[in-house]
Length: 179
Image: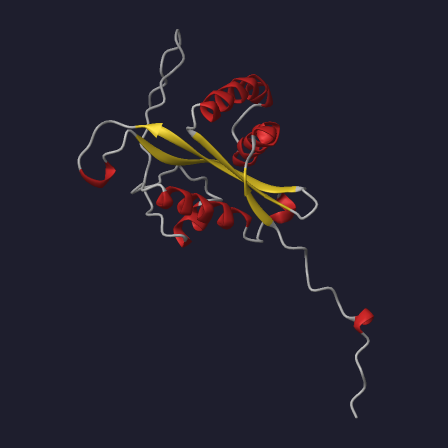
């Protein structure tokens, strides 16, 4: 007869499962903090600029939430510790024909995963929830501007690669450098 396994000696099955939920108004500070961390992770932003931007973003999110143009998603541990978040903003669009003829289009934004949860599918779960949310409401397209870190996630989920073209203008009173 084979020996009985001592259940108390078994290795744990792994980290506790993470849960996804829609963000609530009470999550506003988390969404602001995660957006700030996103910009810091991307780089090129001064903390002083973020200090000025945070209250403006906070007011903007409150307004867009009240207008029902902003939908946040949070992934958290069973005890409520945030692992990541992201949002959809319903961006005003110009009139167009066909399936895209909607006054607003869902824009994926402010995606952030806490470093200790990276590689565990947090961002993927959020983006899948965003896709489901948009599809359930009859939207024909989601769009976004991806960071280098985010591009592989979006590509795996079927987002077509694209380029954002831009022209950076010099600040008033400064001449543009050439050459």
